[in-house]
Amino acid sequence: MNVKVASDSIANNIIMQALGRISSIATLPAVGLILYLGGQWLDQRFAAQASAIADLAASVKVLQATVGTNSERVVRLETSNTDQVDAQRQILDRLNEMERSIMPLSNSVAALNATLASRTHRISE
Image 1 (cartoon, rainbow, N blue to C red):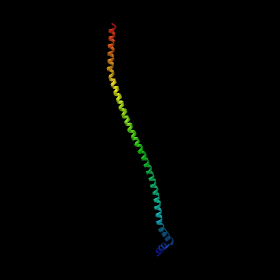
Image 2: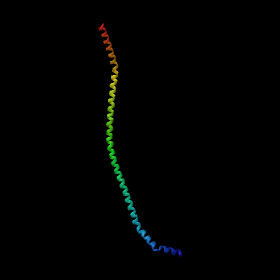
Image 3: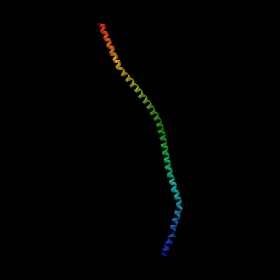
Image 4: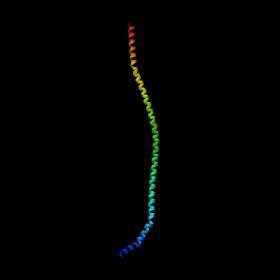
């Protein structure tokens, strides 16, 4: 019987009953407070993410504008480079033609010089 009396005395203890009622009353507000604070923390995280996404989008727009102007510059450089290569080829072709024509001109000058020398020699005789 002593065991039953001890358990009844614990169950009927006013302090224990008061703690049980207080905890059952405070559970719902405590859970609500935890959910509210958790929601606020998540909202701050989402706001930080939204700010980072906006900054990233602005950076992407700047990079897209830069890439657009850079691609135009690259096209202009390639075009001017192609034009310069064509001009260099034309100059080299002309120089090759001049080099090829130097030998016949040199031979012609030598022949004219020999002709003039022989005529001068005939006149002086």
